[in-house]
Length: 102
Image (cartoon, rainbow, N blue to C red):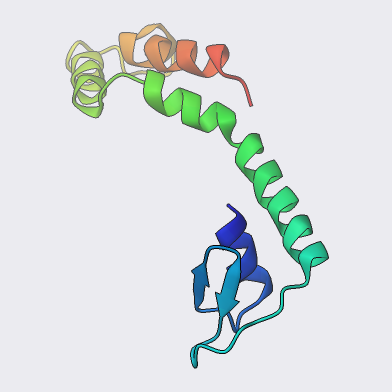
């Protein structure tokens, strides 16, 4: 995350080796550490805010299984406004969303 913060705040940096940063001509680039620290904090907050999405992604049924559930709901006639929320497709995805709220 620190490297990303450096690249975001210092566009002239093209290479980072250890604690040293260099431009395209291999000249050292002096970092504004306050900018880097602020960007690291921003990136961390953005990452933390998406934790629910990462958790959901691992818990959702495989896409093939989701498509199969969807097919069966349509094939049996359950894909109507009155019945859709009772289908396995809907209830499986809803359970993941409820277990990992935004």
